[in-house]
Image (cartoon, rainbow, N blue to C red; front, side):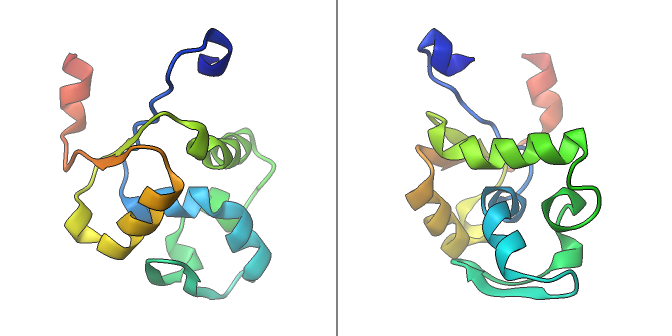
Length: 121
C-alpha cells in the first residue's frame, strides 16, 4: 500500500534480530534443512540455531495457514522497506546485525523498547 501511495514504509520489528533473520531467510532455511536439523552457519552471523527454536511458521507446521503465508510474504518484502527498526541492541548479535544491515535499508536498533510505549503514542 505504501508503494502505491509513493510513501516510505517503515517495518518496525518488535522481536529480536534472530527471529527477524528467520523470517527474512525463510526460503533459504526451508531449502537447506530438514525437520530435525539445526542451522549451522547457514545464515551469516547466526552460528547455530535449532529449528525447534524458530517460529513454527518458518519451517514446520501448517505452512499454508494464513499466518504462515503472511509472515513469509512479510519476510520476502522486508528489503523493500525504507527502514527496519528492531527492538534490540546491536551488541547482542553483532555479526547478525552486520549481515542484516547489509541486506535491509536503514536497519537500526532502537531497543530494548517497552512495547507499552508504542500504545501511548
